[in-house]
Length: 195
Image 1 (spheres, rainbow, N blue to C red):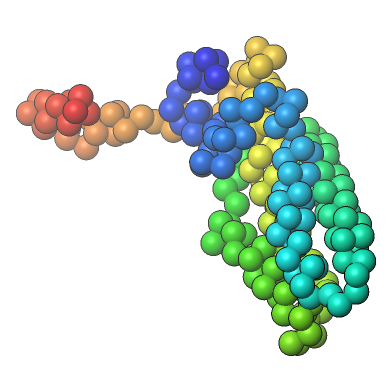
Image 2 (cartoon, rainbow, N blue to C red):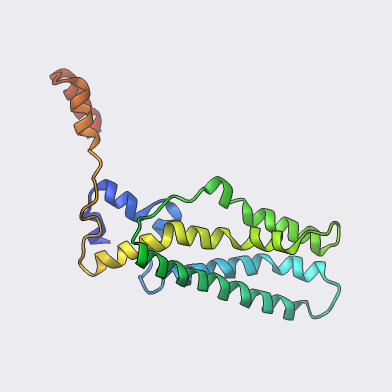
């Protein structure tokens, strides 16, 4: 993290992202591997499925079915993380902000539809339910976390992942251009920045 703090603010923002990515970036690199993050997402979804499986099925072997599906979820999500690492290593693209307004409600909607299906109120297509439950994690890992993890690994290895990239101008430079050398206005801007 000391190497990250030495970077420019725009580079830190690209590298650390929002609150979820910032939490993952505090972990050791081996633990925050995209496959581990994907598997963790699968584990969280599996935990959420306990109640629909327990109360929505009249059979007494719901636990075995839940363990089987939980294992599939964790393995599939982890495998998607590995695939993302390979694709990002090949494309070497930088992180992209995932569409949060779409991704964040998807697992909750999938869980609600699964619950409706398990208690037999309506028949919901299983493909729709599992797509809503599974897609948000791998999409986040592929768009946002896997590229950030690659950049963090490069910094850990002593490489600069931002070489050759166009750096956005600082706001202070833009402020100077906007006031056209007006010293009083620049003093106000400096006073505001110091507060």
